[in-house]
Image (cartoon, rainbow, N blue to C red; front, side, top):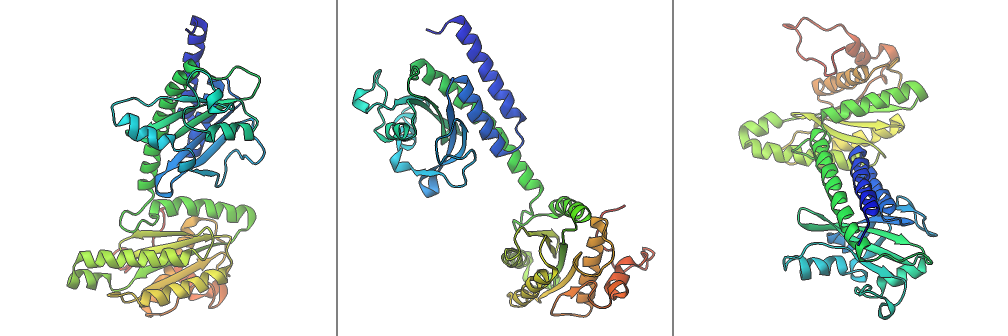
Length: 389
């Protein structure tokens, strides 16, 4: 039975774990805090958090904390193990939870199962082999449960030559896994909120808020390092006609289909952000890609858009700091330039993109249009998008 001092220490460890996870800002920071906090709380030398990917039938390691063996990375890109090699997370779910049991941790040792004491090592040789291969003596494994389902596992190990984990450690690991689950659930909820805040619900593309944030960062990089920033602004032609004659459901399908085409074309520009600005207006933002590459992708986008059923193609305008468009010291100016180019494409019914700065540098008609003082509201046919000063 644990003494008062040990109980106090473990209570502090639980509080510290909860605080560390609450301070995490991203899902990866959250699982890292869970692994490191559990390692310290259980006096282990190594800890890992893995997620159960049901669709792929594997446990994928998200983080390895503490003393790592050869080949183990702190944040592995693709370290995973087939669930059939470590089936206990799935079998325990069906055999015990369905019967009304509570999730609990278990202990494994590097000894063969028949040599293990205290009833441990009951889930087969996989864990023991893994411990021996990595030079570890014992481990405690605790299921991480979210919303009544096995989400993954918390794994903490000790080296040979020190006392192996016991039943009290397994019970404590169960508590730590529950705290970790609460922190992970909170982070997932926040991520979902962030995703909704920066995602267009119809197309699944980024929304205007996401573009504003990314473009501000991109322009800062341009001003600091000269990196090329390009913005493609598109206006899907014929959407009003489709909505009026075929209904908004068909119009929504056209928007979704064009969103998919935009995403497909944007994928040819590494790091590009495809977004729906609202209504029939879309954009593609790239950082660090040559302007000519952006133009080629935009030309392909126009060709694909012209082939969409029910649509009438797309009016496309491009502004890139890689072209002679004058100083770009704000996101608003780049937006106005791309928007002016798109306006000219729409007015002229161009089948190809109109590119700012390629018809005469500072005297380019697109640049002059973008820089023109705004007309009085009653006479202004179109307001260029962009943040207010």
